[in-house]
Image (cartoon, rainbow, N blue to C red; front, side, top):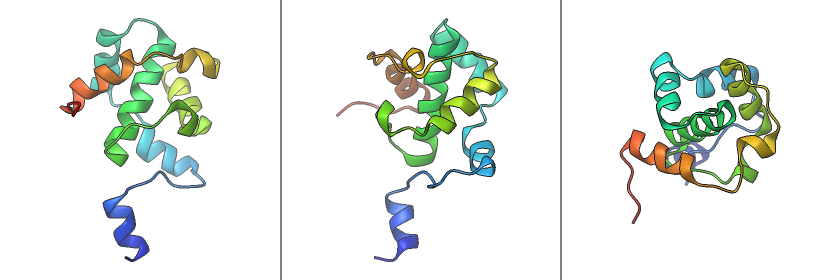
Length: 109
């Protein structure tokens, strides 16, 4: 399997992730920002929701918080105007994933 084929079948986030990658992959649209505010109230939770949504849109699957580049979280938080600590963005809860699954039409097996 060639590297190009592997990226199509098993997409990954760029490593290292560049400012251009952040802008292209992690810029939430106005509609996505509005939707996030209807799913969760706190700004930090909206950031977590949108980061997972953008990862799902790019990779077709969710990632564990420990696998998410901090630069992506910081980028989305700045775009949303949210001050944060990483532990606030990804607490040990999964409600944001349920919202993402609904948004993208994914179901659990």
